[in-house]
Length: 598
Image (cartoon, rainbow, N blue to C red; front, side):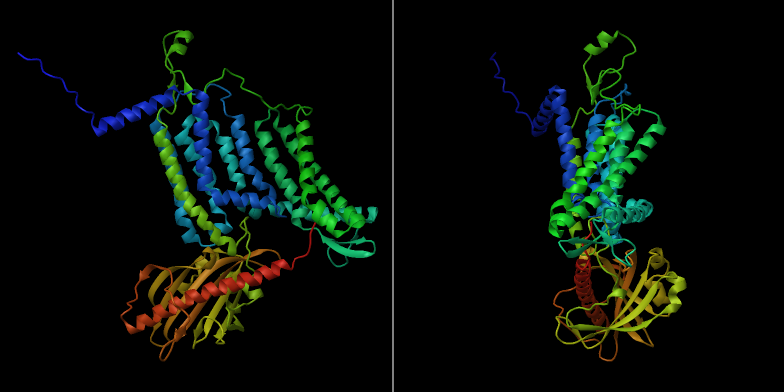
């Protein structure tokens, strides 16, 4: 009998992968708590920066602008501070260690943020940026990422910090808060009128509603205007952001918190009066350049910080306290000894610590992949720079207040349809313009392009009385409808109609927010169309096909009539791009004509 030689069986690839997984899982379990937490925090912050890279950069841009929403750029930093304060539980938390619950809550939140950023821009066109839906989805993404990376206990603990991120969404300020706070503008103007008379630093300009002041330096006068952003509104918004964060964590009666917030608003407004007075003084003593270029950019920020510090120092004298540390035994942020019905506390502590996130690698992969998807869409939002600012405010001036045309084309006002006011609102305007090629531009046709432009503050009226309904009502047959991508991130629609009496029509239309001369925001629907008559429209200058996505119907390129409609649609898309660029250039000239403000 011979001894058999034992030859070990080499591990299979599956066993190798399992061993590798077990090894890294054990390394994660054995790692110090501090290291695990920093890795999780790093992944979370990195994912948010990747997903919302452009959105967060626009928040930083608002800090340098004279806008009432300048201080919303502080929201992410304040949210981080709130998260740091609540990094440890203030009281014992339930021992929830169910990763299925974490993923059940986290994955739908992540998918909702992805869907918002992937699907809505094409559906909402420029209105996606006007409403800054990207920033609305930010806390939704963060909540999902926290649930997956840290677990539901941490998500619940950090609910205040995550909810605070909604305050970075500028639309509610523009829609509701600024309308109330604009009363500060009138109050500031009234106060500065009295201060100017008393100090003799400046003189209110006649017929300017006390909004423009004349300052004289060594016999040379120059003007300074006080607009909403300079009236104290931005300081009030900034203090409401900072103050509400402190009010949420300080301990004390609610009445004292309200009084503290009110006192801070009044203090910031008084400091702003001092800032404007100092700018007037600097202009009178050292000239316009020193007052505007040297002192104006940072004096407001310095006084804002002074006001916040003063109010923080008043927290304790007003009988309120800021909790430092926990008031109950500290519990590890992501781990807790398992509950035991039997045994002493000492025996319980000896038990192996149960991690809330025992397998972090799959969670990291899921969050990072979602961040990459959202990040690609977020970078694409840069196209909206042509039509809207970083706060979602409209950049384009109303077409009806400054009609433009592409290069080599002329625009002539045709008529106004007053009968449409019951449909689109009493202040709505429906103008028709005729645009003709002069032969010098890149685009040419032998037929005019008609532009029907409807301007109204009621955006919903465009849905109630759509272009499709109008043509269907007049007996036109819809041949096809497509979604087209236009300049400035605008999504438009192209349609082809036919009728026995009037022939065929090609249409491209879009809706965009616009600035009015009165300072408000309205909405314009621009409908461009050309009519096929006789031998059809002769088009020159279009070398590439339009970017279209078919929504209904179809056109057959091999059919002569359909081929003409496809050709017209391609031309109208290129024409619409040129028209939007022309409107943007005209708007930039108008905006550059604004005067200097304090």
